[in-house]
Length: 358
Image 1 (cartoon, one colour):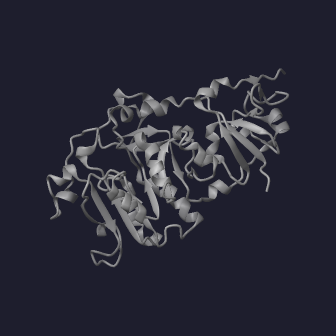
Image 2 (tube, rainbow, N blue to C red):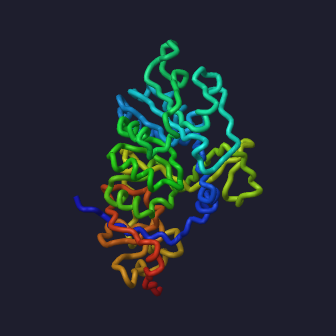
Image 3 (cartoon, one colour):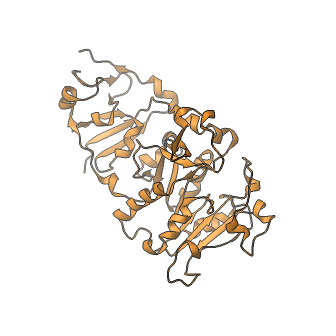
């Protein structure tokens, strides 16, 4: 089946908000930003809607997690029976091994358990598992989680966590943004299924884009137009951050981040064709002044492609190559479009358009 359109990604817009909002994470390597429960629920539900058995009989691993803070463990534990999971595994990273230090205090959940160890709670990671009805109340849920200290600190590159990775069928987490490249490689070398969160900027990484181009990874169902709000274990002072960096909801201050889900689990949205107008209609009726009223689309002087600066201006039936923004990617359907390449960062400003004269 021939493709309708060939796409070449051109992204001239540096995402300043992403860089500024996560600057502390890059400087101090404070990557502890926890996603909200409803964001997880909305994304994972989309995979269930597309394939109700996607998690049935599967072992799900949640690495780089902190089950006492993170909502990933809560969500999958609460839905263990509904999803038909075989086993849930969640691991955390030891406080002592974190580059960013905070005023750590073990939770009552940990200190009230007989296996609590005041030394291990600092130097060892923890592993939480869920397989059966421990409480005997007739259901399997968050109350049935069992935990113990790991032998090591919970580093995902350790042999201990790699064994858990190899045991799992699906890996789901919000990995440290500063280690996104390494974490993605850690997953893809095994061929496992995954659903992970990363910066929108990661699309342009040389380790990431070939996977997208090769249809081995794609973005999730959450729209690019919606920033995720993250919870920080540290108190956030909005006055010390750019106005665009935080959002206060019901008195709670959240960190805003242009982040997206990356996955190789199929979902229905990626198979929905994007409604398009013809090139002629775009030139006549487009809502964008850069398009409307022109005789033809701009063409690059030094690359055989037309410039399409807006996703809704992609012309139907055009068989040549088009330069489109990265923001198109959450509308991408592999049955409708073919991705042929991406402009490397150092080449972004070498592409010049032959401006059409009206």
